[in-house]
Image 1 (cartoon, rainbow, N blue to C red):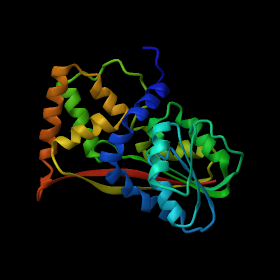
Image 2 (cartoon, rainbow, N blue to C red; image 1 turned 135 degrees about the vertical axis):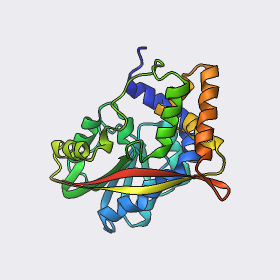
Image 3 (cartoon, helix red, strand yellow; image 1 turned 90 degrees about the vertical axis):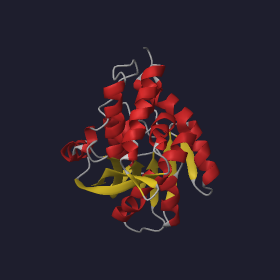
Length: 268
C-alpha cells in the first residue's frame, strides 16, 4: 500500500466528520473545561487551537474571552466548524508545519489531535515555536486502554474475531503518549521548560449497545479504518462482540462506559 499514514488520516477525517460529531462530541467535550482551566482566564490573549475538528475547544475558548485562531488539516472539519461557530478564524492547516510566525500565540490547545499525526514530534516542536515565552500549551490524549475502556473493548473484539493485520498504513503507537513519562519527555525535548500532567476521568454515555461499534466505525479514521478493512463475516462477529461488551455497562436504560484521558500542560 503506497498511501502514507498522513494521507490515510486525512482521507479518513474527510470521510468521518459527521460520524465524529454525532458520536464523539459528547465525550471529547468533557476535557474542554479542564484544558481551559489549566490555562487560566486571560481575556484578549491570542490562542491557537490545533487539530480543532468541529471547533469545540475553539468556541469554548472564545466564550472565555480569548482571541482564537483554529486550524485543522481536514477541509470537511473546517467547514463544519465554520457552520457551527461564527466569529472564529478557522483555517486549514498542518500541525506539523504551522503557518504562523515564531512566538505568535500566548496559549495553544490540542484536544486528542496528537494521536492522529504521522510525526508528532514535529507538531510538538512547531507548537513550541509559535508559543510566546511563558505561554502555555495544553493538550490531551487518551489514557491506556485499561482506563479508556471503549478502546480496549473494541480492540479486544478485533483481536478475538477479526484480523489485526489488515493492510492499513501504520502510524505511531496510538497509546504512546498515554505514558506520562513519554509525554513529559517529548514536550521537554520540543523545548518546553515545565510540564504538568493529570488524568481526567470521563464517562461515555450511549443510548444503545450497538452505538459503540457505530461510533468507531463511522467516526474515527484509525480504529474505524481497522474495522472497515475487515472481511464482512469477521466484521459482523466484531460488531456482535462490541455490542455485547457495551451491554455490560448498561445502567438505567443507557450505556455508561468509563473513559479516561491524559491532560498535559507545558510552559514555554
